[in-house]
Length: 434
Image 1 (tube, rainbow, N blue to C red):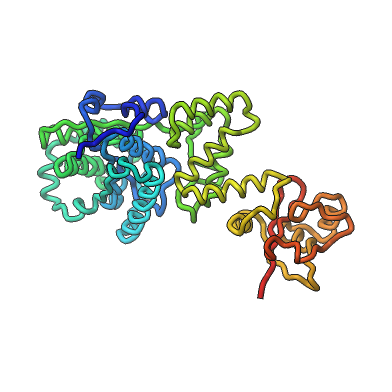
Image 2: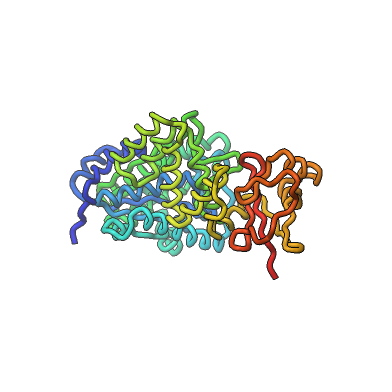
């Protein structure tokens, strides 16, 4: 069955450039893409249990490849992860346990599958995605065969000119990591011969490894292959994108919850919103331009950030999780939020993300002072003072100055109390049952 690009999609390189996903291509890449659909791959390193926001650039590159009518191959490096890629690293990577890498590879493949499915839906593009693990061929590869058939095509001098090696020469690089370039080149050759892959995608620090693969294909298979790289993503201040003060922003919900993930995007700077919408969402060009125009006219409304946060959270965690994250965020930042309109999923998330206290009703009453004391590490006297100042509300109703307790019957669905101290300090009281 012939591969047909999705209606309305732009030529791949034009689309990537407009979306801030194009940094560099090998000579002749544009011409090769113009001749018709190609198969292209991008590798993912399973040295952790989860990918992070920085890896999302590569995933979106594959998404765009499939969306433009080409075949996208997601390669999990179950074999190469046992060696360690020196690219962008100032020191030797620790050797990982084989069982750990296999487990990580399975988790990361599942992550990529989920994101690709959310991005491409059930249409034709979803059928243009293939998953592979290079352990399948690197694991049984005989050393003598590899050195004879692959190593002979590379000179030490040529390899030392590549940035991934050159940058490590002064501090030292092991033969293990030095050989990584050849293994990545072999991956390209192997998939070129078995699957007709002619394009490799990767980060800007991968260009040397990519050209090693195109060179090996030219020499060993007398074939033509190409590469393209994505830019290093930075924010408006020039800092590497995807990091927070607490570390990386992970795609795994157990490491970075959907609510925290949503907050990361909604806190984007005004100057970054348009670029992030282009890079990380499936919104079309006209819709993005309209959002940019509206956002520029009224940046204080933060509509651009809200749409960005919704789209990317839905892309990674699904629409249901995005909806909960949005409602939690709206509740936290809206002093007039109606607690009785919140469902159990929202309250459960609030109880996880905000201070929460299990409370027991005594004589049909719940002690609000105890909630304030435990949730905000307040003394009883300080908690009472807040109430007297009118700074405390329970389920949206300001607590009377002389009140300390509320009827348990006022709990939302007999279970939840949303206690707000001042503006945005929130605690959840959950009524103990049984």
